[in-house]
Length: 366
Ligand SMILES: [Cu+2]
Image (tube, rainbow, N blue to C red):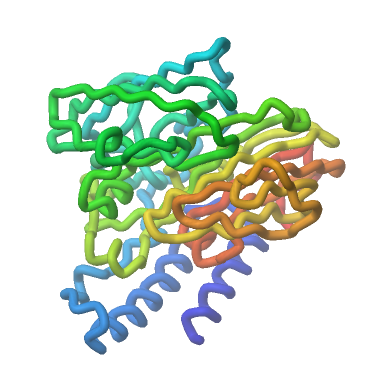
């Protein structure tokens, strides 16, 4: 109970002050809250339920950012959230390369990921948002330029996984194709064992399979949630995966599109009265996302990305790990509207962004 109370207090502070995640005092509150959470978890492990070496292995680095983290976050180019164009015609070619590299996942915090990209230079964690139209043939090629085997599992595909989703050795390429026959937004990820490690190291992304008959939207954004489990703070040198923390589901950071609070520093935008569509995937590897936009109600929600039958007017919708959802909001009043998982421990750990509608008055939040 103490942990819950501490998190709620920390979140209240986060929301009533600057919303600038990573600001020193907020980061400190987050760290203290998370350390108490880790302590609670350690007690649990010592009960013998998890059977792993706890203690130092589960020390939390939550909220620990570089001293110049705010400047770094402000200067950094955010992961593109805008839905890219779908290709014309009957075929969508998707060629992704995998490389090992260190990327930033929070202000001044770097981590050794297994990165996806259209080329080595742009590869990062997560992989690029892919947009195809219902009925298109997706011709996919993975090229593994990393140091260990990887693979590709498209949740949008109906295909024998033992053939299509097989491991691809370093230095090799592999192709398969499928018809994008089921509209929605889907997770894609590396399915090589241990899958927990490959997803936790950044090997996921979203593919939008757009149906022909969707009502129009003025702005469309793709948001992928995921959590990060660090074996060090990642400030002086890149962190690697803590498999103990990943198994225990005690993340250090939880992010939209791979970087804590990036759309607080670089808000998503809309004009008053716009219909804004969010294509949301919860990549996990283990946590769900309770999708909520503060200050509004969903105009339409295609729950579980089942595109035939939207719900009208829900406030918060669960997006399960490995699942998706599609959400329309229509906001008339200019302002800054936080985009969160309403499981607020995740906000505390970085899963918050801002939808900036028009030219807001004042600088604060609700
Ligand atoms: Cu992999």
